[in-house]
Amino acid sequence: MGDEKVKAEATQIIGMFQVLPRLVVFDLDYTLWPFYCECRSKREMPSMYPHAKGILYALKDRGIDVAVASRSPTPDIADAFLDKLNMKSLFVAKEIFSSWTHKTDHFQRIHSRTGVPFNSMLFFDDEDRNIKAVSKMGVASTLVGNGVNLGALRQGLTNFSQNWNTSEKNKQKWVSKFSQKPNSSKEQK
Ligand SMILES: [Mg+2]
Image 1 (cartoon, rainbow, N blue to C red):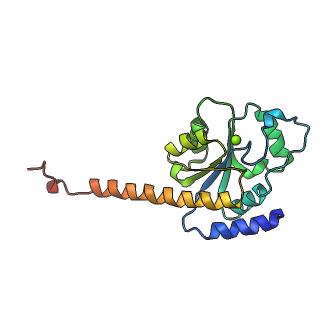
Image 2 (tube, rainbow, N blue to C red; image 1 turned 90 degrees about the horizontal axis):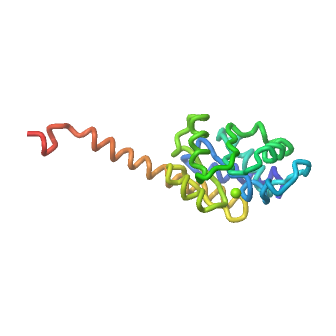
Image 3 (tube, rainbow, N blue to C red; image 1 turned 90 degrees about the vertical axis):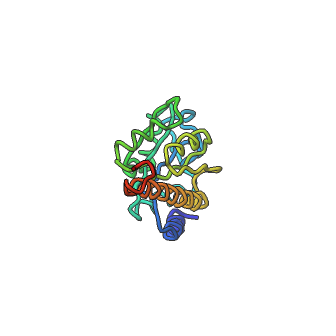
């Protein structure tokens, strides 16, 4: 399937959801491209997973921002590859640095750079430990098995809707708890 065909299908999938993320964050290695960039040379011409480009462009066209969170120890190679793929200007934030935390510091930085709340973000990554750590922050996080593809997009947007509905329900619970009239409480005599 060519990039345009993937983009059209991705647009259709995105159109099926009523609530959408404001920002979608992607890991690089084994999520957007099928290799560890630390094992490659800057002189090589990289290629992404077959659906990755079409999905990124469909999100952008729908007004959804995209960002990168990668723990690569070679940000210079990652940057060079994004440049070669003409992807550099696509991302509103690119946090590429190695870290012992499982991307929670990457997400803090993305949040302060973009102002987007965690529950308005969707994250794709191929490592379970990153997914666990980042979902604890309130970000809808989706594990990808074989790179990001149309199936993963659908799964991710479903996760996002569920995560959003849960956080909205919790918010309403708090609002109704604190908006109760003080004289209705038993402690008040
Ligand atoms: Mg990875």
